[in-house]
Image 1 (tube, rainbow, N blue to C red):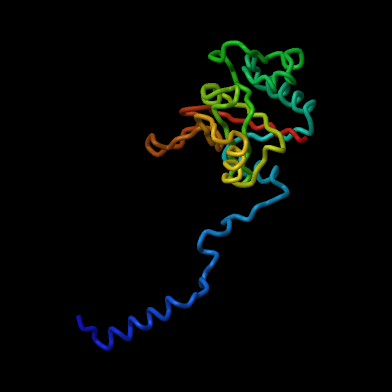
Image 2 (image 1 turned 60 degrees about the horizontal axis):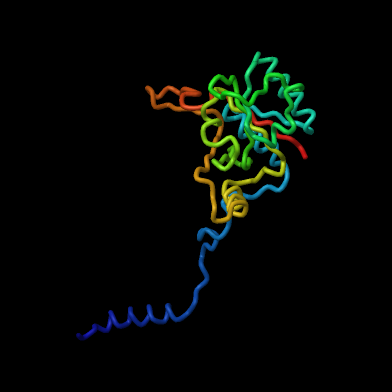
Length: 211
């Protein structure tokens, strides 16, 4: 097949261009860098701002003593008599003589539930939970009020940081379920009206303990 001089000229220019490497005009658009700038300080404040903006309730505790005091004050204020917890590491510090409403019995009659968390994502105010936690899958969504206790070392900036840490923690044996809770449950499916607590807790608390 005979190639016309004009076409041959175009092909020659293409071959010459391919033989020479050219720097990308917009290297940052190739996904090599993070979209959001990572913050190394003030993640507690960033998480609190984002979490409360989405109707979550945030309480900062200077230590475990203050944690118990704040929990007791919340239970007294809400007049709760049955707060369920089944996490051994939390029960070790939350004694019934200091928190009389605490119990390990039937969660179906609980006024609220206390669980631990995997991580807190500062950028979006998201709490990362998993089925590997002692609370399992049901407790965080079954109780009308979900109280989560976290520690400052569990703060990460972005969701990808939490996923990397989960991978490091569990390796190839990842939990059967990993969930991301951002504020209380909500839906606008019914006549486009926002309803809170429709398929999960109507109130969520995060007590962040400074270590």
